[in-house]
Length: 138
Image 1: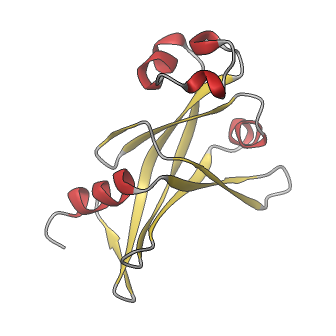
Image 2: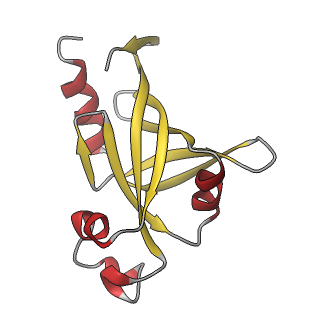
């Protein structure tokens, strides 16, 4: 792969959903489908929206370890990214990724207390394509 960050970034950007895993209070992984990321800084930082009241937010507040998975079903390739999550509830972070139409998820708009941002910081990346996996340097 010539430009790993570009290739992986394209996979991330072209998917309509991603999967996020957290660790619950009993130490088991929980995986959930989410809307695609709203913003990313390369493949190092990825930002998603979610409900402050969600189980995953509660889990991340207790254990910040997380995993994101993006799957390109058309070409049977994917990328698994392990990292650390921060839950951002400040208005600047909320404004940064807000989109028109988000009111359908957060009825009180940008200031909805049940709206927060997941900031995912990548620690390791594993790329899968053509029935082979390889670690990618960040």
